[in-house]
Amino acid sequence: MQEIADTAVGFPTVTFTAALVVIAGFWLRVLLGRIQRDSFDSDVATDAPGGYDLPVAAAASFVIALAWMFSLGGSVFLRRSEIPGLLYALLAVTVLVGSVALAYVVTRVAMWASHSEWPDLSHTDAARNRPEL
Image (tube, rainbow, N blue to C red):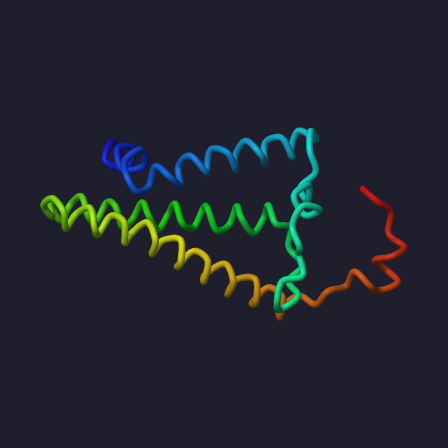
């Protein structure tokens, strides 16, 4: 447990740990009703290729959480391998970049899979006539 805690606050995972704390704070405020879950959507062009209808905050949260997990795993592996000096630093940067890239790809695949599995029903009569929560 101590190894995971040390890795979470060490480079490169600390960058995602900080972002994860911000994301947790955001979703806590959403749960408390202080802000809306799609509050970032008005600031970002959401006309993404593929037509995925997912709030920006949800997609960013998914990418950050996955990147944190991939970075944590890669960092634990690096620490246990006892690679010295400059090579360790180079591999740590590779873990940083690779975890973001892998998280982005996994998020895109998950969005594609959920989009193909669940059709958009927002334009049906039932969706238009339902009461707002």
